[in-house]
Length: 160
Image 1 (cartoon, rainbow, N blue to C red):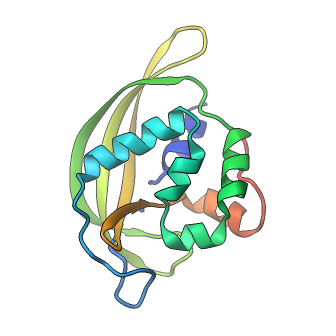
Image 2 (image 1 turned 45 degrees about the vertical axis):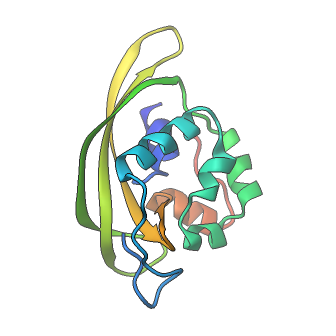
């Protein structure tokens, strides 16, 4: 259940570095707050708005998995519960790898703490780090390595 949340949020991931000059799309600094972006992304995924989340995905990942495929796969593995609170705990620059690329890049790591109300009413607190990458003046997130490998192979990620 927690894996589902972590996978969905950051597929997140975990959620995401500055795009190298030779990489996709350029490296203009985004105007928006990275903490707000990451919290909004988590809420979108919680609401099942995978199409909107795909719109904010890193271009390499958009090239790897079509919007319709991503939405279809995510609908098959929704977050189990409801995100009722999201707090930004920390925002810092640190190296991270864009799955599908060979080396680490500079990313903005956003640590979130969120409360998940599970079916049956129990509440659970979770921490999540989402790595964001500036691409063409906007923030972009990335799918996690295992899920990215499944999408790259033409499959939906494992459910659960």
